[in-house]
Image (tube, rainbow, N blue to C red; front, side, top):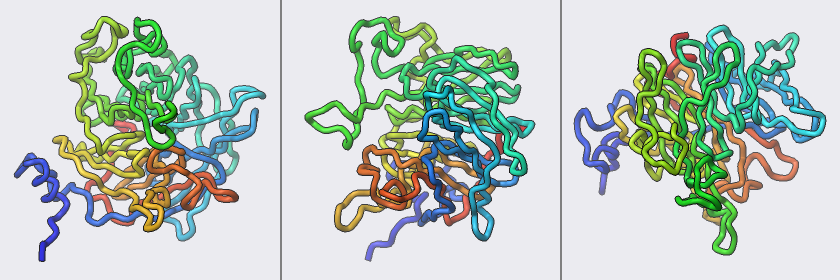
Length: 394
């Protein structure tokens, strides 16, 4: 009978790695891994973060024009975790909907939210939930959020596809720092070539099919996080990649830019890709642990991926196929978007998007008729290396 290898050993063998080049047994994910639902939400959610006490925060996406979005706090360690209202996000106008994505705390305990072309902020309060105020505007597509040691907020432009990454000062001043190379050099994505431009576009099946162009994926600047060295990591959903960007003592980008004259001059060269791998296809948010390892949500694959600090990579968990339909849309993950590693606990939001492994999204625990629209799930096993406290330097 063939004996199954431990996860770290199997990974090392598959990559031809040994010794220090393999995943350290002390930081490798547990094997096996399972997930359980902590709480469901009546509205769809995307972003997720945690405070210093390990309590989780997320926001519902309002489905009514002009309605405020609710900010919830959840204690996953409680005997019966429940949604506690701690604030509200105003809609952009009486005829539009708020649709928040990324969340991040600053060093003073204020919580920030990416929503459309604006970043909002509030201090969570369960006794008197406040209405968030606008911290910054003029950041179209703002998605993932993270803070650097100096208290600047960083964000990318999400589904706009242009790949812009901005720094926002504590005073709310917005500066474009660089661009992740878009999938095409068309004028629509910030390039100089008319029409569709030159390049490629990832397409997901479903909703794509041979007879249509649905399922197109142009998102290249998604989740963002700083590591302890001060490098900024950026999730590239379309390529299934993570970029690494370094800065000098004055905060200027050190990576090479301008390698292709058909893109904007501040576009990073492709050598700035830290890792690209099929396991990362559909990468959305990610979290770092104290050893510099990455825990990423590959939402289109209903999977959680581990990338060691030396770029060894493994799949921590992926939904099993249903025995009848052979689809992976039954859960426990239903389009996971934003993982959080708090202490030795890993939790993720599931937004139930209708793409690839999660399509059709009416199956599973959320998204069907009369069902909740989002949920938070946590890994039942302990993360061996505790999460990196955020913001860096807190």
